[in-house]
Image 1 (cartoon, rainbow, N blue to C red):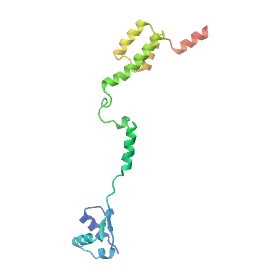
Image 2 (cartoon, rainbow, N blue to C red; image 1 turned 180 degrees about the vertical axis):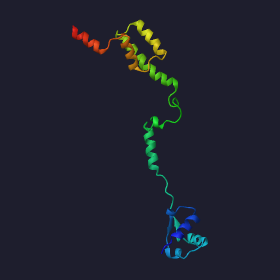
Image 3 (spheres, one colour; image 1 turned 135 degrees about the vertical axis):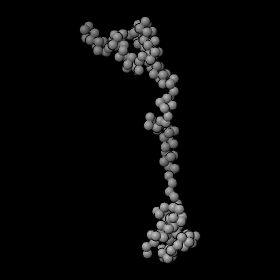
Length: 158
C-alpha cells in the first residue's frame, strides 16, 4: 500500500523531515485521511519519528587531544590581525635575538672588528636587517667578513 501522502502529512504534523518518519503499521496508516487521523496514529504508536542524528563526540575529542599536543595552530587557524597571536614586542625579540647572537659570535671569532661590530649593532637596532641571511649578505657585500669562497681560494693559494 502506498502511504507516501500520509508520510508527508505526518512529517508536517510532527514538524520533522520525511526521512525521520517511520511507519510501523501500514494498513492502519493507509486508511488515515485527515491530520487528526495522523495525530491519533502518532499517539497510538503506528507512526513514529527517528531520533535526530547529532555529531559524534569522538571527532571533537580527537581535535582537543591534537590541540593539547600543540597541533592545529598554523596560520590557517588564526583569527584576528597579524599581531594577535604574537605581539609586536615578541615579534621584534624573535627577530633581533638571533641577529645579535650571530654578530657576537662573529666578533668573538675575530671575523669582525669591534668598531664594525658596534656600527652593525646599531644598524640592527634600527631594523636594517630582516634576518640572519640578510645580515650576512650585507657583511659580505661590504667586505666586513670574508665569504667561504674567498677563504677556499686563500687556502688553495698557500
